[in-house]
Image (tube, rainbow over all chains, first blue to last red):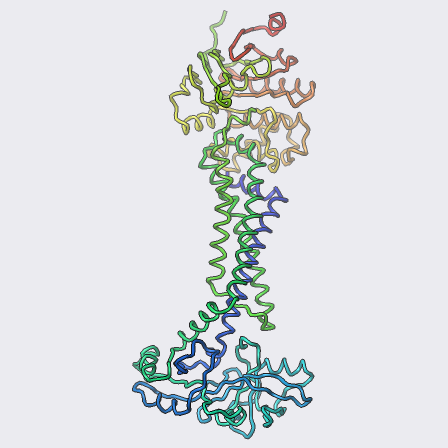
Length: 377
Length: 239
């Protein structure tokens, strides 16, 4: 009878198409919006992921990775003095203004890497060598800088020059790194040169990057460093999640995306629930005939559930497929943000199962109450 | 004179009522009848006299309050719901007034349903359905959907569906109501040829006096009771 149930469903093309498209749209909406949300949250942690240091030392008041409260440079030495520290280097990050050759301006995130070790260097160099950062006035720019400068009519290549706070910067390399939340290009240079480019201030150290010696965990080292007054150390993973949580708590992003996801659920329930109810209602006479012919309730329930979950499965597949296609397309362009962790399709599958179960339940209620004698009326 | 055939269906003093607001409306007020193997029995009477209710009670799709119904010796009152459902699946074939063919299934798929319900594989059920459709003259319509068939052809598919699993009791509710007189006549001829057998009983509820001639016996109902039984249809018109 299950084959019969599927034929009844698939051959009622109008309702089948309505059911599948409703659930596909619902899946697409939830999956795509959740993935864009996750992508956006991932963008907020670009600095942590690009630099990749095991432990980050920041001012005690810092709550997330994009919040920079400058510290004194002596903090690097204080950290180095903590037992269990394998190495500790300074990192400068600040937003500076780059002036292009045509006189236009572009805000950039200037990253000053430790001059000796270049710790936190970009790993994916598209052209040039990162070691050339040690040359005079040398900077390495990311793919976003190339894009943004191109839009302003300036082609970035090795040797291109521009100014940061009236000081010359010469491009010695182009790298590919994770895009920042604010979409500003990353410009890498050495820590010492970053001090020259940045406007002078009493405190200019953004972060101290450090790592534990073998046998000491990141968390343990962070705990030891945090015992020092005025600073706080955070293991990389915790910094990542602290940043994501901060954006969830302190911005309207989750609410706006959550609203769309909830709308997706409502649309799914409204379209799929109503259409499935109509489908069952239209077939009630035939289901009563099956019942009169000796089909037990369990068989009819199985048929209804199979029909509901078949459209759910197909709609889900199409929806997630379309969301993945969207993701692949936008990932090639790197925006809008898109990241689909396995939890997203699982969450969407759970919602679709809920919608199908609800739709089937409405149908089942009618089928279970159905008197087979109605076929004679 | 030969001995009468054994009784297939025995309805004894059955009472059935329906709630109607605060009051109850009695559809059957002590109806009694017998139907025998090898017999084509027609139940006739005016609208609202309880014919369809009696049919529903006989095939176990409707519970009743008083009296007894025995089908092939099985007391329906003593059977549990699941047993009645199984009993219907094994023993009863249905022909409905509106045919109740599933519009999204082909003729052969519609006919195979009772066999699939009995647990026969789809392939075997469809083979058997093709055989039955061939017998009713629809060999070229296996793959047709109900909306591609005429009313008479749809009724022949419905008859095939009622016969395909070889049931011992065939229940027909107004089988000619949706047909013109020629198609109705042909349907009854087909039913008489293919359904009536010594080991089977056919019960037809009808208004249609044009088909009375096909009955072996006619039971007349009025106001929830059986008020007359006639072996010769012509007697009914004089009653």
